[in-house]
Image (cartoon, rainbow, N blue to C red):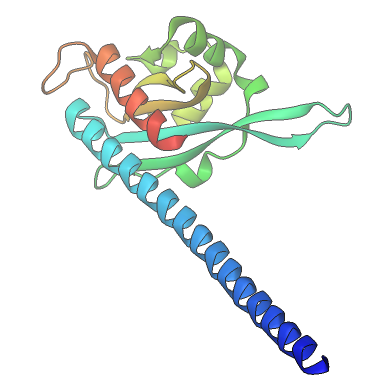
Length: 196
């Protein structure tokens, strides 16, 4: 009887060890798969930004994503947005790292315009009404810009897709299409799919 109990205990112990190893390997595979998926999505976003840069003849194309920051003493969260992807033409400064954790409350006019009108653009940064936003643009050397919201399939705004022009331009011109607003909204839908 003691031998049977010893055999059963050995089998159960072996099965537990095998199950533990299998679960560990499965969890490591999930982590790896998750990182690979994120990396693949990031590459897709950069390919889309490169395409946008070429089609719009812009100097900089980028994605800002909305996120929660720290909390105020009241417990209310600080809503912020940060540049998460950016591509630039040769000789143009990359500004992504300098465009992190902007509080939405500091850019009320710009964000409201973006949400209500579905776009925000200017051929002359000097005419931008939101002084905080105009200041950021001027510090980046921007003369003209075009931004559209990035939305999920259910319409929730999760970010901003934009292009900047370092030199002044007379109009927004595209290589293929005539309507930059339609083009940018299409590209925002594609990028939105990669971000969620």
